Length: 169
Picture 1 (tube, rainbow, N blue to C red):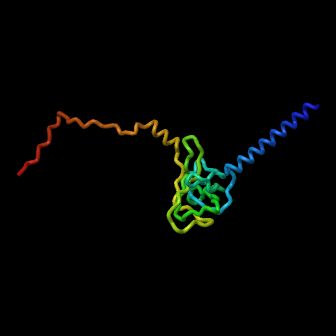
Picture 2: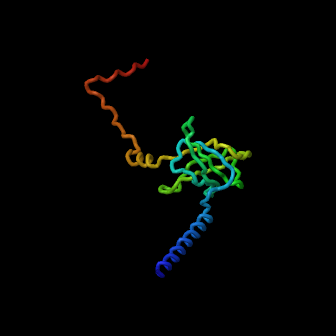
Picture 3: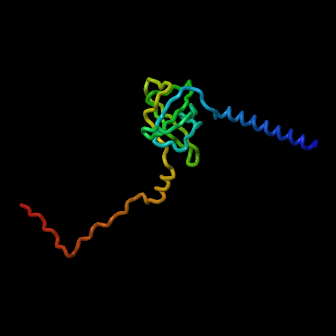
């Protein structure tokens, strides 16, 4: 009976240490949701984007995707995100779905515009670029030669006489 009690204490200690490491990692990496003002973007494709996905500018996390839904009128993806209050986005900023690498995850990349006016809560990005179908691109690259086959010049038929040359005055 004494061995069972010691094993239970060791197991509890391991669970507590794991919880502390998880909490520390969550807080230091900025993996949690970002509190701030909400902005909206409409995309034709949002493959790889889900609630909790990072919104980055110049590689720095400035926000988090809070919801996504299908716009029933335009059939485009409507993505809502929360951007930190200390980050002011120019009104003409653009946003695109970017990839962290060939095998990495996706995130939303914001490119700041040059406008003097700033986006406010509820504003919508005018310029968006959806995700790119990498599998389709790889398939095109692998299965197409990339060059048109050169067709040989037509060979004149020997049974047809050549056309007469135009007369010169």
